[in-house]
Length: 268
Image 1 (cartoon, one colour):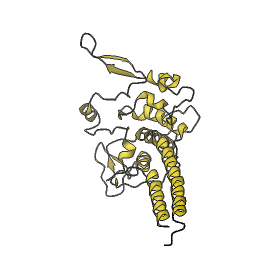
Image 2 (cartoon, one colour; image 1 turned 60 degrees about the vertical axis):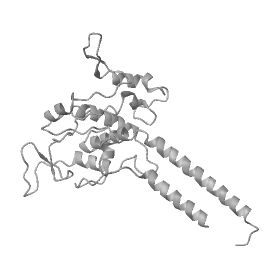
Image 3 (tube, helix red, strand yellow; image 1 turned 180 degrees about the vertical axis):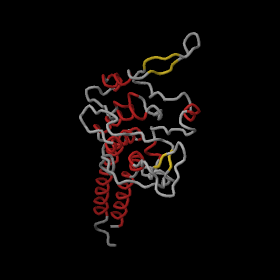
Image 4 (cartoon, one colour; image 1 turned 90 degrees about the vertical axis):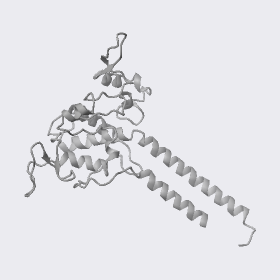
């Protein structure tokens, strides 16, 4: 029985670790209760929401926020927003090629030693909106816009925090709170004052699937896309984790049966 107790403890611990996500210290703001399809042990990415989130990122966020760790072709990988079973090689997907054609990238040097611009290919990474961090700070009042590649996993309660931040801007601050020039009041942000102006407005984008582009809907969609960008292998990892736990459970039953068979004639 001691063996079974140990196995059960390990099984529960593995289950908890499978559903856990990396978090950092608390941001200190007021978080809204929100639910995302990718949460929990059996969670998966809502592909339609992630596709809409990519549109929100492109039209509302990409002018300031880079996504430097994601290649364009990653959008067509298994589990990604634009995965197509007919084109398992994402670089051959017409959708991914069309997305790549939206960008230009700096390449080189050429034979004369000069850098040049060319149309992006699926193998290229998403181009950054600024040439360097100094240029990014100069265009954003000294603040460096965070990279979207790992932002969800870099914040405590990442999805809820970012969703709350995007949907909690208020025109007026509470009594006693002074809003300095260039700042905005957002109770989800630690301290309440944030330099980034509200990035989302009603009907800011026009969804091709007819979904109403409310601030809450756009925030939910872009957070889903950001969650995928931060952890593109989540679905694969969860499936593998369950396969390993099922294997270990069956193996434990066989080991327990062998234990009982070997020691059945021995008095304890």
